[in-house]
Image (tube, rainbow, N blue to C red; front, side, top):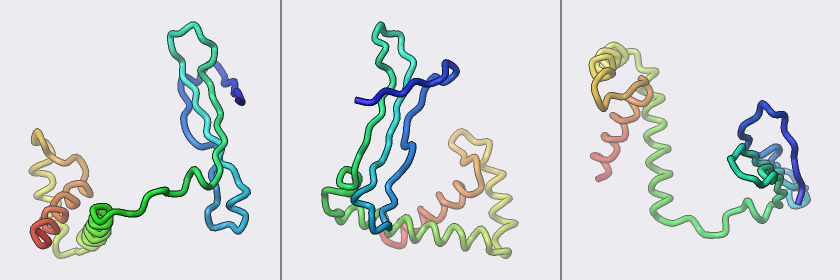
Length: 129
């Protein structure tokens, strides 16, 4: 097992240091380098780890389910509708006023995009029931 030593100022590190280019013709030969580091109140000095993973460990092993396909379809439709609505000058003033009115409420959306997303998501659910 490889070991990485980090400067004392780093309390945690977690993630990929480099990724596999799946579009490359040499993707099968590449390795993903993952590193983790944590400061923990333990007596063990082994809080840093480095892992190597090949392409087979990052490709999906199960088929896409019908539920996942539905979720992806909804996400694509709502995302397109949100982008279109944010660019529509005829709805901007009304949407901005409605957003500001709900923003400080207990369950209010804090960003304009999340507010419009909630509206378009509800409209999608109602239309596709």
